[in-house]
Picture (cartoon, rainbow, N blue to C red):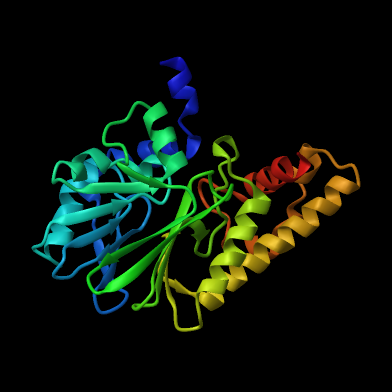
Length: 285
């Protein structure tokens, strides 16, 4: 059990202890992204929803204790069952409600590494369909492309692109207007994260609506700026590493991130200091 506790990321603990006990205060906000595609904001990662005559496709499940309110929000959109639940990765704020959703005979889908990680966290309701590279889901009159990106936020990240609706759900390979969490302990890396954003940008156009893992709905222009921020920080911190600077020296050098700190990118979990440390540790390897 001690080993299991150590494997739980600080990100999940922070979200649980700062907001998890406030279930009564959670409000699920429904935002329409396209004719039959919706985003649910609540507690944890943003949920994507496709509704139609063939059933509901759900992307991520947030925390278990929020499931009743999430179900209520989905019922307001559709009286059809939740046919598929796709986990964009294994973190509890995206997969914690799996066991509750699975009770409705929902098929859970995720990358191979997500099943492995959830299984080793001794959780219930494992993904029953997994994939290694990409797959297609045909539901509600359109093709949904599910694509894996290597070693980005974690080692099991998926993005989902609704090809007719032109909506992209990025999972946590996009934190809108804030520094991203790159989970180095779960296979994430700065270079992999940047590569994933670049590849995702190829998929979409200026009219694409984006559901980020965290933050408000976005678009290609904002995602492109997010990429430029990541590349800028990588260049600056690589320069520090080549100059022989230590992690502590980089951690206290606020000039490296000032331009984005001034825009409010530093937040309660990924502060400007933490993002400098994350970049240093990933790029130093």
